[in-house]
Length: 190
Image (cartoon, rainbow, N blue to C red):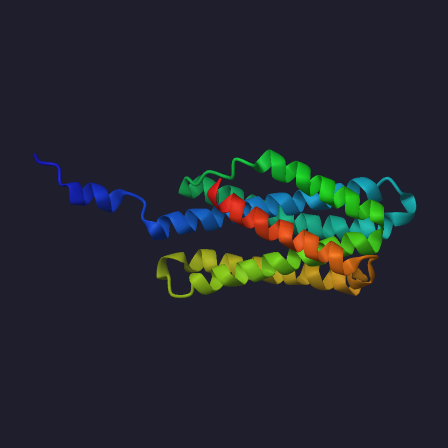
């Protein structure tokens, strides 16, 4: 029996497979980071009885992100895709960002949510577009559509809670968005 090198080459992961792995890795990392941000915010607000209302809102958004993270945990396991090697960093950075913005006040915490969700919902939109004609990935595409709608809802909640009235909103939002975009690029590869 001879070994056909073309068959072996066909079994190797190609550009499409690598791109899907990158998409899943970064989506998992993003949801992991979002959960950490909300946990950091709740660590501050849960300690202040007069902040129970905002803590409750944040807990609701966190629950949505936990659902997303659980889904990506399952999808990564099913597809044999490794998560980012930087999960401990995303956990610490996310928690720190959440706690720091909560210490700055409710509006700053909501500005953080608004900035993160703005980047993430646009990122999901790009992925949804990329999967539009991929018949084999329509289930994933539908999941991303649902998750994007959830992220838009979180962004709207943050805007309605006064995110744009946070002290230094423009700078705070810009720095967080730059950080999110950088984290996306890094998490795709590492």
